[in-house]
Image 1 (tube, rainbow, N blue to C red):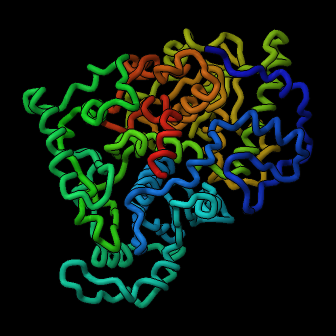
Image 2 (image 1 turned 90 degrees about the horizontal axis):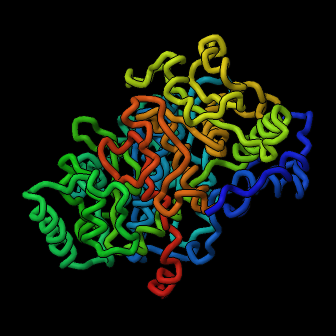
Length: 527
């Protein structure tokens, strides 16, 4: 076990420029590295060492799902209606499903996203505005991603109602829906010509992928496993708290892994990718609150793979390939360097420039139990934070935040994102929350907001990094993160805990713990 590598070289070698950071232009590059434009190689290497939590595993680029077929099939989906991190969670889930099903992923049209409307230059977005999806498409043999316009232009004429086999007219004959304000006609059309996900609800079931395709025995085999688990527990799923501190080996038996995965609270059904779904040329995943089909879930909490090697591959895929754009990573790295320099200047013994971070979610957040007076936040967090240390505050409070958080400033050297505008002035305001997340991810200690998917993602990145650096507690997925409220949740990240509902309330160590196991076994399986 060890602490993260010293950053003394970072804070002393890297002289921060006076000119603002110039965002990277979209260009082809390898996802394995980090490319900061207009940056000398030596400096780029320093920024890369600061930010990279992912790994480069060449054999993973070649892996294709056993469900991959010669005939091209498709998966379409509607973005989540919530904030950015809810949208990201659903996108990760459908991307993993598309690869696991051997389907081409069709991206939704460019559109408004909730709370991402705060700048003059750009009001509509596609997922390519946040992730290197073009590079992922080019680099990975098993992944194909196309736009909605390309899909409709090339394939709409062949689409039929899956029940009646009748032709369904494309609304207005329109193939380009980018920037539209009303997507109801498009989603209605895709539901009419596609097989929909009315039974695939993360609250009600676990989505299960058999180990091999077109297996007529898979449904009965997997259902018998669930039946045996329920029989053990008098018709109920196991209490997820019974696994606290007792992780099932990642290469454990299918029934042991499923038992741990169910998550309690009546999630006692399996949604199996069966032969009927395999045959469908188009699957459409909608967002329908009436059917409870919203994919407000972590991909690893909803999707279960009969073969443990497949499970770990998809956890690596998201870690290594679904990451923020290089321009965001590079801007965040320079902000982190500035914070480290500040921390070292204030305390010469802090040679690594360690700083702490806290995320205080307020705004339209519906969970009032987390809306504490800053004095209470201090009282609940002071044992984990270092008195007088530099503390980065990520918050959606805009007006009067410095006055509001004065009770924290009385004890810590508070800094905010807008203290470092020279390093991101050319980035749109809609990216500021992502920069906050990236800066928080590299802090020594992180204090989060319970129920916040924003805080949750920070903790997942911290989990990835803790394993990469073999930090204290990494074997059990433990990270140096806490919550300031409610107090009974404060120490959630200080022991191994399995997925449980509500799934979105936090991230779980199964996302990052031991996921590099089985790489050689997966290669052997593919060959």
